[in-house]
Length: 200
Image 1 (cartoon, rainbow, N blue to C red):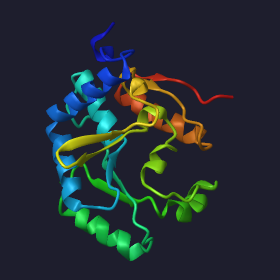
Image 2: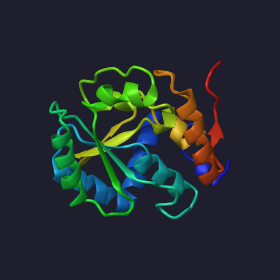
Image 3: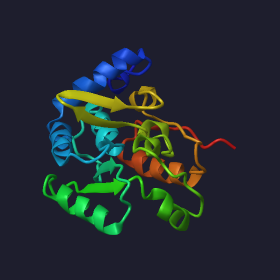
Image 4: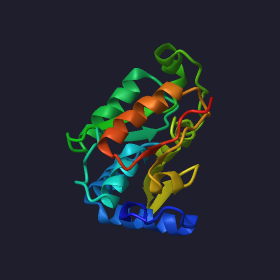
């Protein structure tokens, strides 16, 4: 087995400890987690690429920020006004470095703009992690935050796909196009990745 797959196929508890160890070694992810904690957003999480990209880079000995476009931050605020989200975005900008940029999104708002942008309905959520359950690719379905000094991880499909470098579709929404487009971009950055196509 090649070195980048050293945690693939292991039991969930071992994979969880591996992710915690990689996180603790990452000065970037550690700094972002503390910055998110300082923001004190309602139901705030660091999600998706800010975690799995850094894991893939760690396991393939690439620079820590290789391929990372931004740091996605989710939160859930019942105030869905533009002004409220804009204030939160500007506040986040004072806590995160300019590069890679932080992308902050209130998940209470998504059902309001998603149909017009993507041409299909989106459920009205009640908390931020419900959005993670709907990502197009299972290895992307991951989030983390600090609870006090403890790291809290949310991974509804487990960590096997991430550690196996496997891009497996999540069919919760009709996200075939997103799954294949994102996978193509990522496979150009991490050729170790293996694509599982969207089911017929």
